[in-house]
Length: 119
Image 1: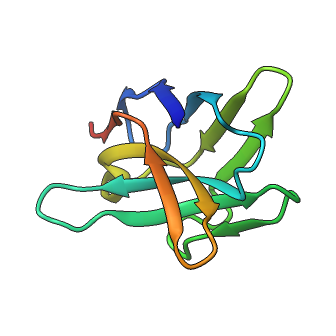
Image 2: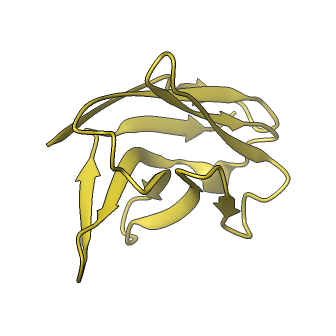
């Protein structure tokens, strides 16, 4: 099992910045990928960004150039730096850890943290 605890959400004005943190614990030695997803009201959960165990990153087109994912293994913490925030970034943000289990992905999720971008 993997435990994920997010923090850092809140209310921010358009153009502002926030940094989300996700502290991970448990069976993490064979996790293949970690990332951030988000779910806005009335919409499906969508991928924001991922980082593999080798450090390769991927971003949704909507956040490229504005969001940065990083990881501090010494602190067992995953970060999401969000700059130039827009109202459409408003959503619950979820930390994710994934392990390839031979024939399928094993996914673990945090409880989510609300990000609201509004005047």
